[in-house]
Image 1 (cartoon, rainbow, N blue to C red):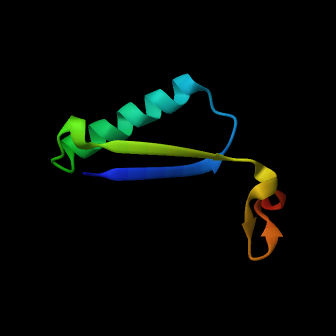
Image 2 (tube, rainbow, N blue to C red):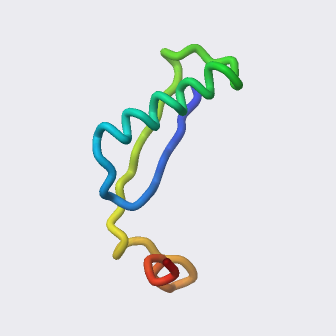
Image 3 (spheres, rainbow, N blue to C red):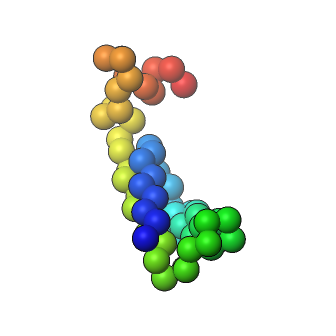
Length: 62
């Protein structure tokens, strides 16, 4: 059971998430020899103000 956990800044549309989930699933089927019904994708949408790296706000690096 492949499980892909995508953590990224919030703001992507449901359509974009579905498109990415399909592409991830297809990659696991083609490259990872997984059955499509076994691939799971979780999206975690994080506010930029909640994402820190080395005690600094990651958004400030952008």
